[in-house]
Length: 220
Image 1 (cartoon, rainbow, N blue to C red):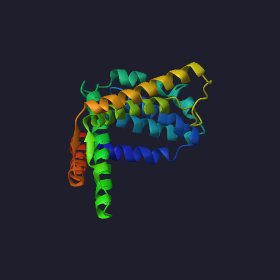
Image 2 (image 1 turned 30 degrees about the vertical axis):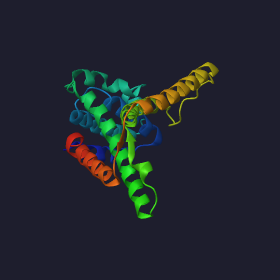
Image 3 (image 1 turned 90 degrees about the vertical axis):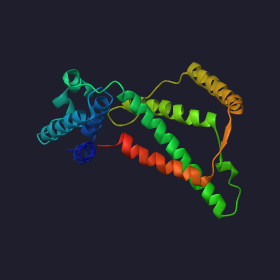
């Protein structure tokens, strides 16, 4: 069975779980997919765990009673003995994120530029791209995705973020860092060349990026 088919089946099984069991199982998914277990094997293990959970659920058991207190504990031994992913898989993961972000960016530029041309407006806003912008979009998307994954991993059992105490010092640090990044961005943006890209070229790049995602990163 291909990875996409297994993910689809996994999603269908999750729909049959109680809210608590589903939240618990989604934490198991995060732990497994973030591990070094080979992708196909990881999805096979998740399907087996989902079936086991539903079997126990039908007998009135909760996910904690079946797998233990912590979602990631059940897979510890399995992840240690299962074949690991190739070393470059993490690099491929980051490349996929940056590739997707740039594909979306050029797609937006294409749509915006073509709409402006259609209504007779000025499409220059969508036709100039700084090299610095390309770098920020690529690397920024990776950082943003990592932060999102970590935030999702911190969700509590009722799917709500865990409450955190207000830290004025941390807030001040975030504000200072944000201001520095903004001013550095304005300064660096002027140092990098600006590329003129027509909406049709952006459309071609967006289409090529989408095709590349399909052929390179989503072969399964």
